[in-house]
Amino acid sequence: MIIFGTKKLKFKKGETRKKKHCKVCHYDSKWHLISLWTWFDLFFVPLFPVSRKKLLICPMCEEYAIKVNVENKNEIMKQLEVEK
Image (tube, rainbow, N blue to C red):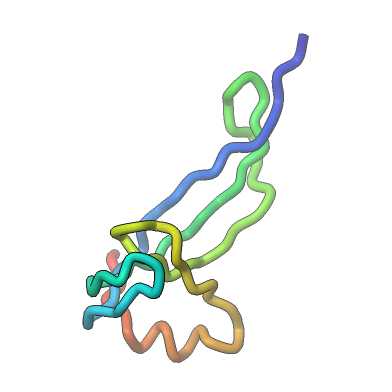
């Protein structure tokens, strides 16, 4: 029996300098920039990445997020304090 699937891993890359308002939980906080990796795993061991997304996400509810893409990348990066 072979057990395979996917696993999502989150890595925090930074946060906004100013507080932003969440439309879902209505809380004002500094939002987090995360990299969300989806990995193919075999027997619960991640083997290789399938996809990667960058998201600006509300840390309170983690339901509302803004996807970082080519159109809005420069605007979002100006708002961030990036962790090294």
